[in-house]
Length: 371
Image 1 (cartoon, one colour):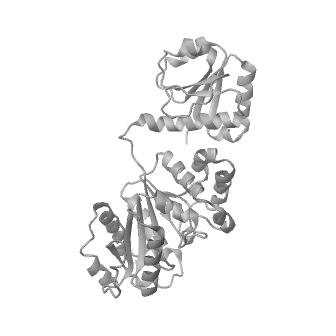
Image 2 (cartoon, helix red, strand yellow):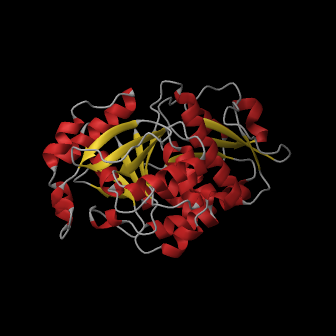
Image 3 (cartoon, helix red, strand yellow):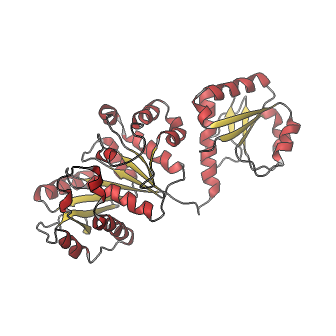
């Protein structure tokens, strides 16, 4: 990812040099490239280049001379008296000079990111969050989530796969660097203002599936300590990158706060159920406990062509039925999960049914053929 170009014009050259030194020797060096100016004439000459991108940070003393100068750079002002601006819509944000340098640069980054999104307008691509959940284990939830991510990616969408399980089985199915989730959890808890920039560095990429992802591997304790607020921050940070059409969130079977919050912030929840009495009982109990979730879509998995149990007790009708794949009864190699073209194609049909609000009439036949 390209660094944000930060141009600094300050009448206090000692402060400016200290600011630049701090950026170059801190974690912000991965995100920002700073250039100092001591003469306003050089900055005015710089502003004539309307192709520049980045931030012009200047002290309040230069405000009268620069306020009417048009530029493609984002103007921000170092102030000795005015408190920090709070809204992204602020035309020219003010940053309080005498706060900590860490806090000042964090606010600068946040302003820049939010301003970029705000100025992009309503036509900007919007990231949709799809969570995959189930009331009991062994439902095929992760299999559904990962195949859906693959299908959306192969159809040209930019996809991020995020597992919030204690231990993710998808870690053994995906290619790319693993084990970065623990570092991300550290920043999420200790320096949440740095989460957005760190995501660019710590996310993994599977070139085969063409998706970015994060999966926990051996961070059980850290995942247990992850709060609902942490999840909200993580998902909002992913959305703020403005890179993805879809975020597929793979959830474990629990009502841990991180799971409940993901359900709450999702545009759609794909709730996997099995044609099993115990699974149906748990699903009905959990849906009553959680209250009315308007964005839930119940999907029967491992469907064999004949429905045994009565699902009318659920708050909504079944949206789709995914087929039973006998080859997945016992897995011995990671490659096995990619060997069913039928299931993979059906996950996209399921997605289409969710988008249109209509089930797929041939799903019963396909499920029966797979049994």
